[in-house]
Length: 340
Image 1 (tube, rainbow, N blue to C red):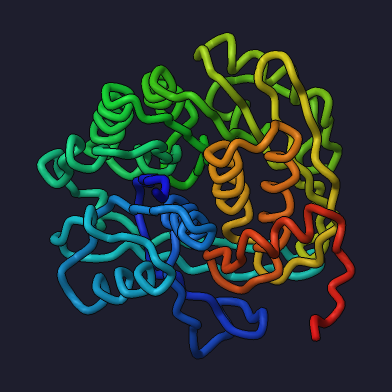
Image 2: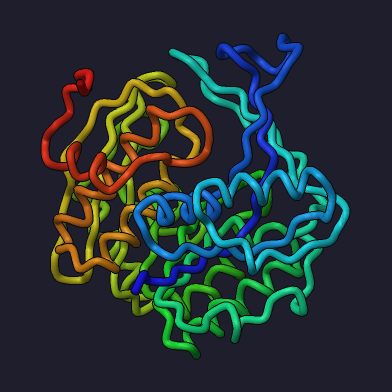
């Protein structure tokens, strides 16, 4: 029997200028659908799990297009409520070389931001579920969503469902102070936390000793960050992807995991980036799949790192790769040679 996993958050319409153009110079946009938790659901569906996405979208052709895109990759949309006035939009200008990527949000008053508790029957949603995943983006959308996210993680624990949360701090959505207040409550019900060194510092004031903007990543220092998170919130596991940014086009990438006793690091990859959006979500998807299928901590780190490495070679938000492709890269097949 396939393992049921539920993710909860916002799916948005992403508009990206083609050919690495800037927003101010383009006369057309590529249409893509995506969002943190939706991206995780697609990864899990591709890996053969029973992936459900809970959300709310407007009952109009744009909302339907978002649902259709999820269904295309095998994500179950039964728990997506319909209503509200609009689907959130974000404009993503892909960076190159020394020019960073830039995101402009147009998501205020979206259907999910104005959702009510009545839109989600958590008893039904968590029936037979084994894992629930959300992020710090979802409660940042509105006061309503802060409350609903807290209700969701509480209900998950009442149903014996494992809970993971990616802190995913977004300065354009809320303040550090508000994030710390809300996420401290949410984290009381979390088992597995995903948090890079910047998230941990911005939300909880925990520092790793890394110079994030300067590219100086203190890998071993993350163990102390993870230990502080474990001590504060009684977590089972803390994981992070670590990005060493040489430019917008070229990054080094690795994963670290810590369970309070064992600290592991993945292989480090040098990535020439096609699209970095969804890199962290693809790590989350790889980690969830690894834990549900009984992989060791080291194997989980390698699978998550390889999955997120592959994602950044694919345009769009979704990681469209199979278990076999991820395991091939994790096993050392990184040449990129043509398969014939």
